[in-house]
Amino acid sequence: MRLGDEIKDFEKDKIIHPERPLPRGLLSIPQVTYALYVVFGLNLVAGLALYASGATLSGLLLALTTVFAWLMYKEFFIGGSLAKEPMTYALTHQIIVFPLYAWPALFFDVGLRDNTIFQGWLLANFGASFTFEICRKLDPNAHELAGTYAHHYGRTITVLFIAIFLMASLYGSHMMGLLNITMPMILILFLSLLYYLKNPAKYKLCEGLSVLSSIMITWSPSIAWMIKEWRN
Image (cartoon, rainbow, N blue to C red; front, side, top):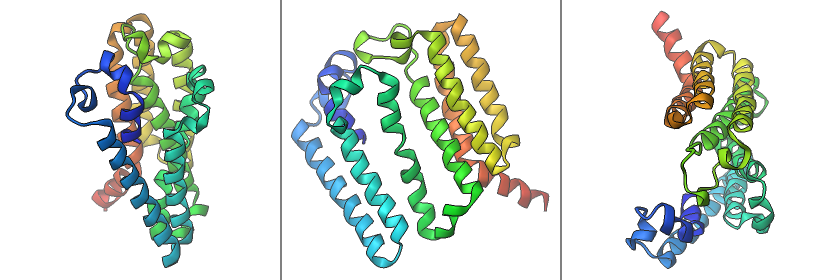
């Protein structure tokens, strides 16, 4: 996905991110495109191999993730329409979180597909991933080519969107029974967003806290396990 983004954003990055490898000339577009095809092929073969080995659902999800990532690279062949509505564009790209996060776990235990805790974990991480996606694009002084959410929707509407995905993370955490671990960080992040509304120059605070919140959510089952082990 990152390789695809580097290729797609080449012309834009020459202006707003000239420090990246492609604009600097450290790599060429044909080189990165070749690497993209190799990684795509390897992932697809790995998914088919898992399927053939008996890990049917896991293999299908890995193959689906790979094909979906390819469609993301191609902007689902409707890039012009998606670009007009950044939130719709982001949604079509963030939905990949579900198969991407699910296939490794289902390889080890296919029974997790019916596990409420696991389903909650997937939902919480979807919310966290979407939250970070928006929070990393809040700079009020960003170049117009960056196409930030704040530029398109305004700060207030953007924060409302983030609040929706924070609620998704909270509900997923509730399904896991781990609100006690994830809620404090989510609330701190929400408070930083309210602060950002009055002080947009502090956008980096929201970005950093969204990273910490995402890490906390991703590792919350492990944190809960460690706490339980420590108490025992």
